[in-house]
Length: 91
Length: 213
Image (cartoon, rainbow over all chains, first blue to last red; front, side, top):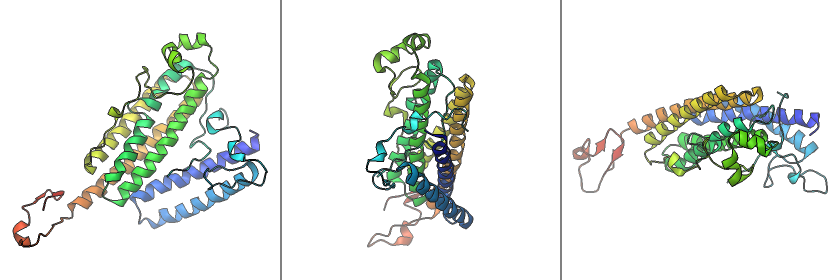
């Protein structure tokens, strides 16, 4: 995986983590308006990054929720899969 | 319904092939306090939760545990994929190798297969959330022992992330427990036709929780 793709993927993962953490917090604090505001911003940021990544490198989500891209090939099957990337020295 | 995201939750890393470390780390894949047990425990308990916060927390934490299972699998896979048969024997993984080669299987550090007996789903929401808080603490301890055993700084970094998540989940389950207590503290009375509700009051409730009309 080229370094540019890896860096964008890392940013997607970071944004995903922020949204996930706020999601869990909101599950037990559903009336926390500030957390909800933060979640909305985090979710927007995540969706923008995912859209940028998918347009360049193919879908991150399966079952039709990801953007399949414009190439004539089914990009979902492209290597590497998540467990095949060793992030050694890249964080 | 679930959707797969083609990325890890955390950028897991491994410095070098290390089957001996893999033998310990695999317990968080298929051991008693591992991520498979955590995920299945929460996802199966959610059906009988009485309040929306509990249903949501169990669904979302149960789903996150699946992502942790994938992180642990990534560590184990990368720690053994380049190992020679000699390396495997030296690490004491020869028994595992005979049954699974280098495939991932749900075992603890001693090779015992995963069992549903590791988890409980009791039907009493208070009991279940206590079980989960204990489970998070047990997993936290396991990650601490694994960090003591680890001689790989990249694996350490990844284990530390998983260790932190146990603490956050413990916190969320503690809040769910408070919400459940609050829910049960609101006395509910079922009125039966032909009976005087005043006569029933207090006679058919147990600590505000179980009410048999």
